[in-house]
Amino acid sequence: MHFSTLEEYANYLFDRKEANQKIREACDLLGRSDDNIAKVMGDYSLSPQEFIEVIALRRREGYSKSAGNGNVSAENQTDRMYGNTPWKFVEEFLQNADDCKYDKTPEIKIIVDDQKGTIEFIYNEEGFTRDDIWALTAFEQSTKSNEIDSLLELEEDGVFYKERTGRKGIGFKSVFSLEAENVCIHIKSNGYSFRLDNAIGRIIPIWEDGHIDDGNTHVTVEIQKPSFEFESIFPNFIAIFCADDYTALFKKSPVLFMHRLRDIKVEHISKNGDRDSFGISVEYDTNTQKFESEFIPEGTILAGIRNQGKYYQKSFSQLQISITPSSGESKVIPCVRETWMVNIDSRYRNVSIMCPIMRSVEDHKWTTGSLFRTFPMIDNTFDLPFAIDAPFELNSSRKGIE
Image: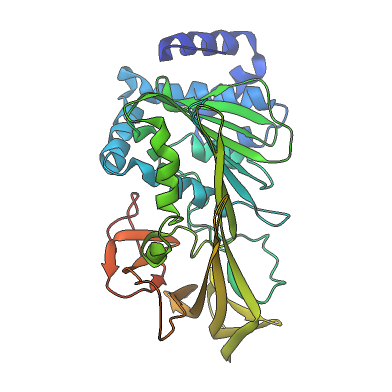
């Protein structure tokens, strides 16, 4: 379904509501009290399309002048936060994928297609839930921030994270701050197929036919008439992942401290159909892993260190980061990581430091290191090649360490 304006889409939604009793009753419940949100979310007599259109009817009200234009104000706030760094959305999308639930080895592939004008993120998570969609179609209502993943089975030894960094919150909308005539996000996951269209409203979902039933989540960014050359996007991804300059890994690579994802592949399709790609992976050597200072934690465990059913205050691991271009020689960077399980206000989290293994003779010079909160905070760098990951308190744009 194609709609050019919010008014056009709203007219369609009102007609749907008039003709569909289930949509009408769900909207009535939501209009009476926020206490009915859980009741509507749990009503699986609503089809996926009906559920999307119920949300759209409710979100549309926030774009109404008579209701205060609250969503318009939130969109303007997002542009103020991300207007100067719109490509931050890449990290935000990676964070969303990293926060997902997986019943298999996590994999993510990114396809930059110059022919279609799209950037597609494909990952093999279990799929979007109604909670995820509700949070995605709202401002600052992420269901994942500081949430403990109660389904995480602690069977593997080592460093683990039960805390979600913040899935599908306001950072997800930073992609709309890209300078272009219009930006759309197409989402296909777990039986749901819809888009968010900047020309209609960033949190008003529009149902789309043609769900991809391959067991993966597909999030596709469509950039219509950008003010920049689309051909510059793939080189931008090369720089983001340090595939062209591995000496900057500890300053800005978004793969160092991801909790679940260990392998990322980026593919490129040029306008004339040529293909190029690179991959980056992080592999830990379990044979070198060491655990120190066994203890019994007292408090909520959001992240920690565990080995054979026992908790430890400290762990040490060796690992290697591999950068693999489609042509040319791969680069393997040996590293070490040390992690501490720390108690902050009766809640356990992890603090880690990672650095390369440096030898007396090197054929390169490492650049600066940086602070991380799962992902790099470029404003906080220092002149040594190591990275520190800690549960810093940040604002919505991931700046401002308190």
